[in-house]
Length: 267
Image 1: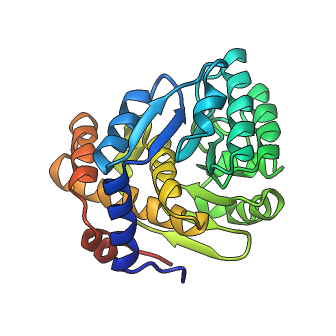
Image 2 (image 1 turned 60 degrees about the horizontal axis):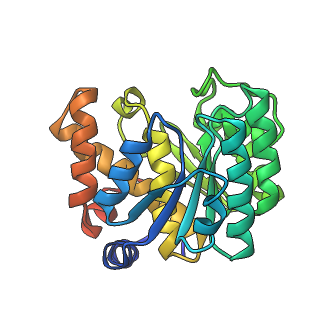
Image 3 (image 1 turned 135 degrees about the vertical axis):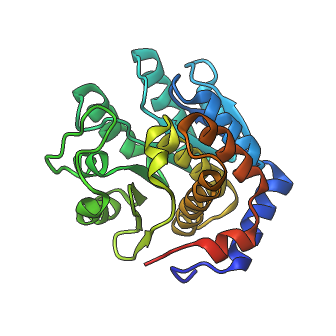
């Protein structure tokens, strides 16, 4: 596709998600599981939360896409993530890596580097996480970035070239790159940083698009536009974090291709 999607791109993707309800295997953290499951359901996908070593590989091999989120790790979860990503790769199922707090903590930083061997289609994180995963010295403050998203574009391009993945840097402006092309997406609202799990939800939505779109670059761009435009629609109805979260789920449920094509702000 050209870097700028048109209404037909959104219409085809939303129709595919809503008609087929792709199964999205989420290995996500305990803080956000409910929000990400509801976001996927609202958009039209079918979420499954499986993170044990007995089932993770089996589900990853048959799911439409796998989303691996490092938010709340344990040795058992890490073992299951290794099994699931290996299985997804072997079965040619696309998977997305969300490297939560990579760079700030050593254990997850080493795990993320290990998981890259299993070839994620998309990597989505904040500027500090992406910079650290690319090998730059950029430790975050816990799960929060200490860098603006535009400061990590060069690191994202390097990571994309080295990993073969499309890389998304989330922030006030979201950036999507495949190592050469770079698209900036200026949608969303600052209140999204006051609701836990918005970044994790972006990864889950990325998984839904990845399940129905073969091109990871196109899937990532459409997913981040969807997150941003839905966030703006939610803020128009709810200007406080608690009610915003509910309004955001409603916005995903109601969003149409024309809303996305007409509302996106790309650079």
